[in-house]
Length: 140
Figure (cartoon, rainbow, N blue to C red):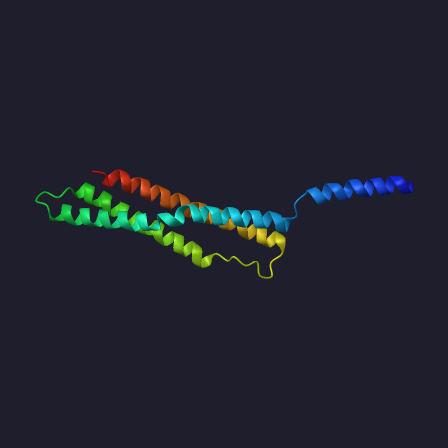
């Protein structure tokens, strides 16, 4: 190869690799995605607790009625449990989540963040499902 061909090859190789984001940049983007999922449902935690309290009040009222509807009571107990479980799930996830990469390689961080995305997606879906179910059951 001539000097000009080697130089052209190196320039092409450099331009290709310069345009491709490295794993650390990709990890920053993935971390931002994980936090965005968290941030989407974090404000709904108050609503979870509010609906749980409404369900518990309705349970108490139904249990004190002359002819309690045991099916409705059990349904509301399940909903109250799911609301509480979704609420707790957010805090369980937050306690185990680390925003620091520590001594991990970029590839290890990638695997960690992919796992965290899976976990926070479950939290997100649990919260949304519990809210939807509760809102439907408690509407009057």
